[in-house]
Length: 152
Image 1 (tube, rainbow, N blue to C red):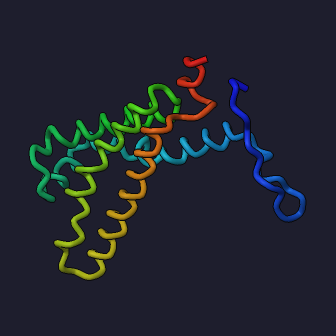
Image 2 (cartoon, helix red, strand yellow):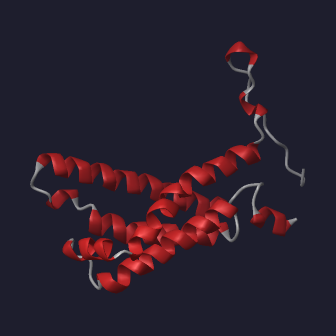
């Protein structure tokens, strides 16, 4: 084990040890769940209707900016998923999320209370995902990744 000790989580109810699933598998699953949203929605950022919607929301140069956002989302998502240059990939996701969150989820400008609530939820969801991206950008992909394989 490359000089690091693996910590075990104490036994929980019914004698099931929470640390019995290898950490690498949990981190890999976490990366997969983290990037699903980018891999699923990223291709939509190349569609005419998505670009038009973004333009209607005040996104400057939407014809150019929205497909670039798609590239950031997809490249960052694939990078984090496979664990290749993961810190860079997570940084691309953060770079994608900051303007998208501020431009597309302006709950403070919405007059309808229900829609303001929906936009605030979307804004907060993006902040949470941004937090995850920042953590990955600092700590990397974990043991089951191409980055870990390259460093061995």
